[in-house]
Image (cartoon, rainbow, N blue to C red; front, side, top):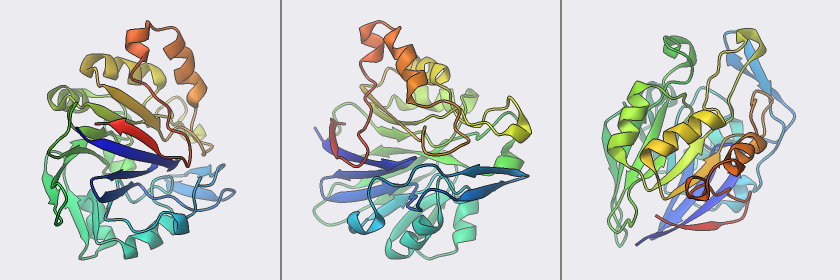
Length: 264
């Protein structure tokens, strides 16, 4: 059995600590107030800063970077942090852009490993993402999620979904993975330029996905702090309140900036 300490810093950024390991997802530490370009005429304003500054995070063993080309997943301060990390795991396209000896690029389905003395080895497998509607990948770019497995897990792998909408490859992977714990990227992202098109999961889609895989614990993340999010925590809360307790029980909100212990 492994107790994992999750600290939600804001947006997709979570510090994951267990058995001597310190992992960080999608580092974002810029202050609020700036508008960032997301390409192809889209942009968004950052509304909320990190719950903890970079200086309070301490040393990090590895960064799990779902993608490097959107500033709500890697901003300027987060990019500067990468120079202090010995391992960055990201997409193959991101690895080419970041161009460092510490960067490992993965395609969906491929696995890399973290090893260190006196710590359990971690198998990190890239999981598929589609950051928009069908045929949007040339515009939205490569994105991956991460499945983490190590000896002693009680409920199964830890799955970090990454920014994605539900689609066939994602559902198939989730069904075969059977994760025990999920860091679930939400937000129902939309941009005025592209109208009703969504670029990340809605609350309804997330509930449908989790109903099929039945994880022990679901921690929603990446649903707040930016203007392009169309669904905040209220949308999921309303839907959870309408469900029977056995379906809503796995969902637990991580407090911003305060460690939360979860049995994985």
